Length: 228
Image 1 (cartoon, rainbow, N blue to C red):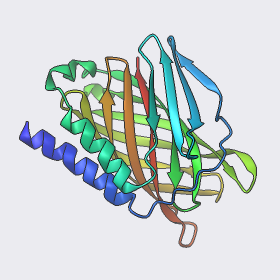
Image 2: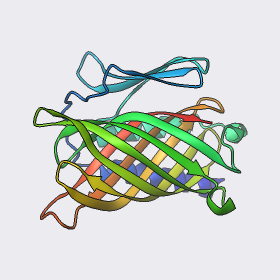
Image 3: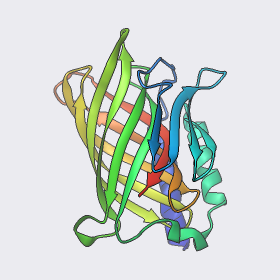
Image 4: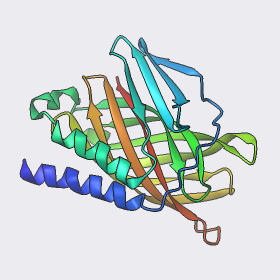
């Protein structure tokens, strides 16, 4: 268990370190204010009174609000709090055979200083390996007043649950629709399950765009997951 906690702790530290220079400018995003519903659970991306991004959920699995961390300190505080209240007895919240997980959230992009909404789906249990998975999704944003798809991505994933909490890591690749360039880079994250279906998640990635000079940057994201 100490080794597992060390792995999760390293994920938190990496998440904070990777986002050390992330900008925090909040910009309007196209799907802000739209309600998305999965199996009786609804999700809404919005902003709080300070202009920060947050995701609200309500429905059969409960009601909660997640404020997307905008600084490494905030990300560290959230991740540390999850680990401190982790209950190993709740590891059954994760289906360790195979599991589909929908993600809805928002994030901040360092290379543009803008905000995006994230909609994605992951699958764990690839080739009968419970800890390995694949995922993909889209990013919606506002660039120079033009609203639309900021990019799309796919991921190779590794997940290690230790109770309520699971550490995640992998490789992300996709297409930056604003720069018209492909990108690739590492990603790390944490998930905290409230029950067998509803969870909260944090993620940071560092995207390299080989075809664009000096085009690389950090991203920090967060929101809710729904396992089905």
